[in-house]
Length: 526
Image 1 (cartoon, rainbow, N blue to C red):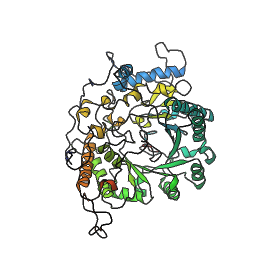
Image 2: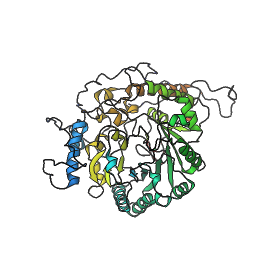
Image 3: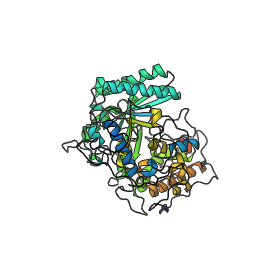
Image 4: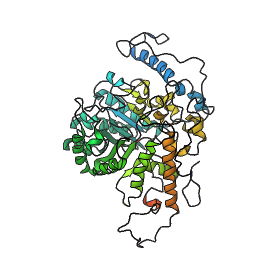
């Protein structure tokens, strides 16, 4: 149920220092709500390893039909073993018959480069469970770019999409020469203009910032491509894990690039920062403000029940504590110094407004990733779960994006509350939390149908913000032009800031798609 924040309207109970943990975290029962297929067989083991990803024969009707088909069968076996939900328990055809309609893809992440000039020690692409990058070509070829443009235009035309969002990603996409940076975006715009002339194409590049130069910024600006930068804070001490392949710190180069980007506000999408409990939250926030970001994305570390985040203990909420320290500073600042996407998303969901992210709420997933070899994958964040977790077995040459919509992995992320654990469906915060970010629900051998590993943190964070918004909604506003006592030398008291000075109170004319928009960098870090 969506709750309007108005005087006299109850919100979720305010801060509870010890949020009640879900009763089914140890052994959740299969859902009886979402359509499922029988699963009598025990999960299969992974296929035997060999000299390459396609080595080793696999029995079955596809055996001998070629390495790509062989690998697709192996991937199905791997999905069934690691994630029975959704891969053996979700019957997509039954879900369609029950009324779950597919939602078209609206954001396309183009992996223009599969390698990176940094070697960040926590990177989900290179350092976590999935090592598929090793088999990818270093760069996307012109032929693959052309095929991607054709498929995107085909999808936009088929669904009369008003807008599609492109994200140039990697690896490090700025490894391309300045003259080549805009080629994928130009190709998509040309193809879309021919097939779906009413569709607008927006573009963002997500970078570690170390290779930003005047030449690259000029090329990106000329193509209308905005720039999002990933950083762990605004000081060298915050970025000790962001090093190059020789172990040398990358912060100085990233800071130089960010200062240059700040001089081009029309190209500046914002900064993404992963929460680090070892760093002071206020110092991290204030130091990022020195780079004048129009928005800051604060991301919870990619973790799950089989690989919990640092500091994770039952009954504690260290990530909520860290985030709420920043929220209090941001909320009571008196001046809007930047947008913080996580807080604004929670406030919007509390107000019943559309969301722009897949990490909260029940908005259907609408993102596809195109790797450098032309394979079509799910969101990169799944790479934190297990080897091949993002894989679909589909390619630009053999599949359309409409076919991707019926892939169990993506279909599950479009089911809303029917995809959630029973405890989540019964929770009063479900419309805001949405079960948390999909990869955070994973447990090996079970899949993605558990509450978020950050469940207690999300409960505390949402309840605290809800209480702050309700206090603000109940506080009388001064008449227009009336002086505010002590405003010149006293910070605003808790709850005195008007709601419409802090959050939007009307929905935008065109809600951005899940996970990212032209106004926000994608929720993935370089």
